[in-house]
Image (cartoon, rainbow, N blue to C red; front, side, top):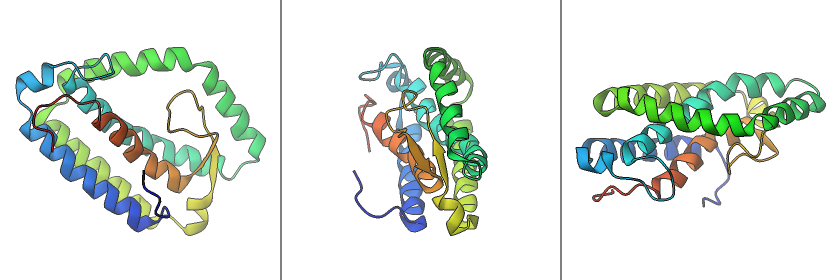
Length: 178
């Protein structure tokens, strides 16, 4: 998608692009839009919108893990990724079911407030990361998500949320997409 080097500014700009897009989607979607099935998933549009937001919550939870693993010897993160990889099937089922349930509770203005707080936190943390820490990384469970690669640095983890968002953005079937 984006061939520009992955800098703080690039990540900041993509987070702000997504923020504006997400606000438009959530505020403009009718109840019928939210109940409509999405394309290529088993979620409705409303559930998929929550899942798109959830990708950024995953990023928030990954940051301390990647910081820690980036300080440890490579075999530690490789082994950890293999252990996670062994749980791929249960992970996918939990991911699917939890987003279905959460979308019933976290929607509309509530979801937008939580989304904004999450992006604000990511922006703040990104700006505070030392360059050497942004370059550290860890091995990832590659079958958990198509955008996880075998090894990812912290900057790529910040970017992952937007890759995930953009992928699922294409699957929405909301009539008046932005």
